[in-house]
Image 1 (cartoon, helix red, strand yellow):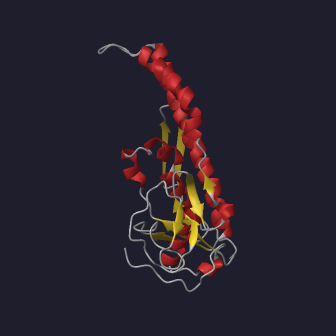
Image 2 (cartoon, helix red, strand yellow):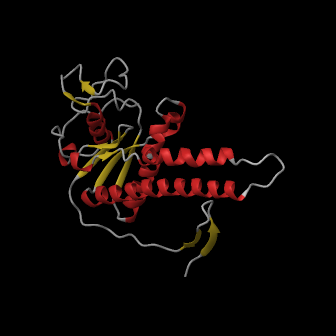
Image 3 (cartoon, one colour):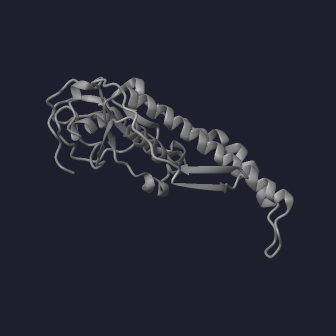
Length: 241
């Protein structure tokens, strides 16, 4: 029996019933593999395994044209102060709400399917503890919002908890500046336009996001030998951020 229940209607006019019930973990078989994840905008998630990278789905971008049309309809039919909204205005508002809901569901579906695949194939996951709020004030705000990093991270944590996997949240400071091979740190900040990481100490060269994903494993104390493309199990731990 549920401990509580809630029935409500959203802005799109859809009715929902929400129940709170006790759940049980559903452990998955051990795989012996680990995965490092770095969040980004060009790709929502770059991992130490090429097969588990999550490209930017661009659900919001595909719906932008239709959304703009509904918003223009709302602006034309906006009632004057003190008057009730017309039927046409309410219809435009409902169409806008339905489109927003559809995009949110598409993002959630993409995130859950990816999280399920990641959790099924790996025993331990090192994830950048990234909070994308600051991106809302940058020139990448719209693209970052469409990437839905926060929703994807939440889906991964929920899926890992459900199936008994271990998730290590790694502090994001200097993860783009440290070398995953030797632990050395660059002496200068890397601009976003620079997509290749070249270590000044050991000379290792790799894609910037892939290097950051491997740094997640090292910082989490996981054995990088269990990850695809990481060959140095004795890599030095970087300095504390």
